[in-house]
Image 1 (spheres, one colour):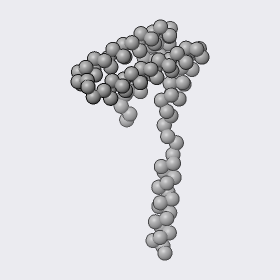
Image 2 (image 1 turned 120 degrees about the horizontal axis):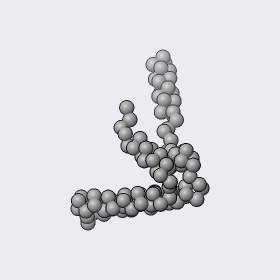
Image 3 (image 1 turned 30 degrees about the vertical axis):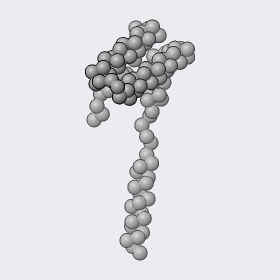
Image 4 (image 1 turned 60 degrees about the vertical axis):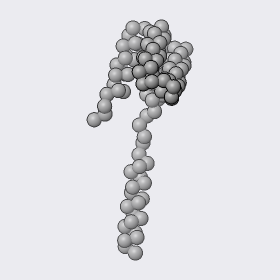
Amino acid sequence: MKKGALLFGLMLAATTIFAQDKPKGMKVRRDSVFTVMKLSDENKQKMHDAISESSKAQKAIKDDATLTDEQKKEKVTAVRKEMSAKEKAIMTPEQAQIWKDFNISIRKPKQ
């Protein structure tokens, strides 16, 4: 009986550990950066649309089995350059710097 109660207590404790808050999703983090950047609602929507379009294009390239790894790399690079041009058209230089810093920070390995 004592072992059963102990086991139940440990299982209950384990479930509460896994029920901790999850890290914020990428969209939430992007929205907070957009707020810091002081993007207008119109520009926020343009950025979300551009990011979504770029993500879909990159996924399609990566999922295309007919392309070699080198071709995939070239196409993804082209999509990223196109995305960079769209970003520059939407943002001011100051906003672009904040965005660049944000992108660098999310790519750093977590310690």
